[in-house]
Length: 180
Image (cartoon, rainbow, N blue to C red; front, side):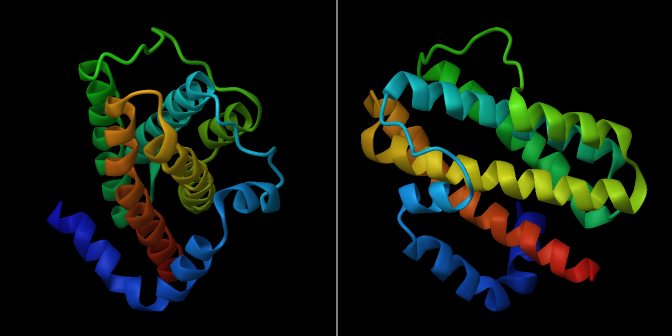
């Protein structure tokens, strides 16, 4: 945890304007600006999207822990994989239904396939982008779940995830800015 906080603090001051701007855009508008479809309010669909997103972040983090060239990125990936596993375990403890198999679809599947084919600096760059995309999507979903999840347990999980996801976005942006 201390290592992760150190990464965030290293570049947080320079990134606060970015976060402030991202937080000032309503989630529906953020999603539309990124080319997606308007957000759903269906609790079952939100849960499904959260599980798919968490699985994507886990799978890409597992690849990053093995293949990342940058040591800070490799550390981030290891911690992200642990956190996503804990997140899934928390959902199970809350008795939320999680399918035994979660397949990546569309853009997520394409990103996973691209990551599997890359190595070195190219992998690192693609990994950062995949993680940032996944975290931005997860932030939007978890904000909605925190506000209108189907159960108190879902709202608690969403509430706990939102600040963690924001800090991950800061860390990823910090690592990316240090590479250039």
